[in-house]
Image (cartoon, rainbow over all chains, first blue to last red; front, side):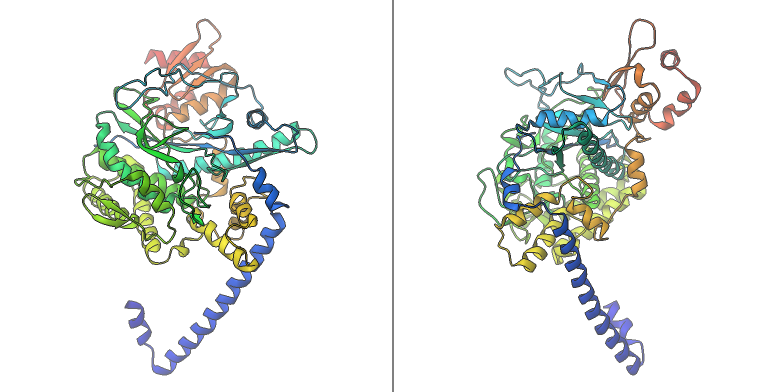
Length: 65
Length: 496
C-alpha cells in the first residue's frame, strides 16, 4: 500500500518514465541473474567430481550418533 | 529466571579415504586430527563422563560404561574445542559459547579446522591418497551421523515439561534447520527431495539412544557442570548447517524456547499427535503444506506452530527480557530473523536461497536439473547434493556459492580464522583455552569441567570448572596477567 501511494505522487509524465525504467531494469536484472546462474553452474561443472555414478556408489559412511 | 543458555555444537563429519586399498575411517579420522595437532597432544580426562545416565532419573538396565576407546585420538584445542574420533567419524565440539552468534562462529571455525586437517593429512599420506570430509548427516544409504547441540538448563525444570514443549519445537523447527537431501532412507516413504537430512532416522519420542532407534528428545543426563544446579540438554535431532543464518537461528531460537520452558512461560499445550510420523511428514514436504495435529491449535502447518512459538517468544522478550540468551542486540536479531524467515517460508521459500541450507541446495539442484534436463534420480544431482557439503575450499559447492556472493554471511572471515585458535571470552572455555595456549606442556588432561595441571611438584593438581559461566575473560584475565607459571596459577586459585 505504502509503495503504491509513493508511486502516485509524481506528475503523470514522470510516472510513466519511472515505470518504463523499472520494467527495463527488471528485465535487465532478470537476464543478468540468468547469466549469473549460468556462470555459476559452469563453475560448478569445473569442480564436480568426475564420475557421478561411481562417486554416489562409493560414498558410504559408517553410522554414527 | 532462566539460567544462561550456554551452548555448544558437536559435529560428526562424514569422511572418505580416497585411493587407499582398504580405507579405514577410524584411521582416516585419526590422521586428520594428528595432522592438525602438531604440538604435544593433550589427553582427554574421562573421569566425569557418564553418557549412560538418564535424565528421567534412572540408569539404563545393564548400562555400559561410556563407549570410550582411549587409544583413539582425542585432542583439546587452544580455542577450547574438543577434536576427536567418535564412531568412525572425526568430530569437532565447539567450546562453550554464551550466545548464538558466538556458537555460529566457533562452529564455522570447526569447518576451517577440518579443511586445514585435510591439507595436513595429505602430507602424511602416500601419493594418490586423499582424505575428504563432508559436513552432512547421511550417506543416502541409511547411515546417519549427527550434529548435536547442547544447552545449559536449570536442574529444577521437570524433564516432562521439557519434553512436552520440545517435541513440537523439534518437529517444526526443521523448516529452517534442515540441510536438505534427495530421497528418503531408513524405511521412510519415498520422496524426491526432503527438508531434513536427519528426520528419517528418528523412531522414538523420548529416550537415551543416539545411534539406533534415535529419539526426538534425548535423555542423556551428563551435565558437564554442577549436577545439583544444571542439566545439559543434549539435542540430537538437528542437521549440520553450512549457512550461518541457519545455525544462528537454530541455536538462537532453541535457546529462547528453552528459557521460556524454564520460566514456565509456555502457558498452553502445544504437543502434537504422532510426533515420529509428523517429523517425517514435515520433512518430506518442501511445499510446507503438510499439517500436524496440535492439542491447542488443532490441525496446523509446521509454520503455523512456529508462529505460535514466535508470538510467545516476543511476549516473553517484552516481559522478561532475553538476558539469558546473550547480549540484548543478539536476542533482537534472533527474533527479527525468525520472523522474516517464517514470513518468507510462507510466501515464497525460494527467497531464502542463501540463508537456509535446504532451500539453497534445492535451488541449486533445480537450476542444474533445468539446464541439463535431469530427472531427480540422476546421479549427478545426488553428487551435487553431497558435494554441497564438501569441506575442501576448492571443491565445496557451498563455498562456491559464498564466493559468488550468493550466501548471506553473519561472520567476518577474519573472526572465523581467529576463532580457530582463540577461545570465546564469555565462558570457562576462556580459562581452558588460555591454559592450553600458555602451558600446553603442563596440561596433563582436560575435560569440559576440569583441567589437570602438572605444576612441577607432586601431586598433579585438578582444577574443577563446574560453573560454565566462570573462568570467562572478565573473571580470569587479570589473574592470568599476574602469573607466569601453572604453579603460580594454582597457588592463586587455591588461595582464594
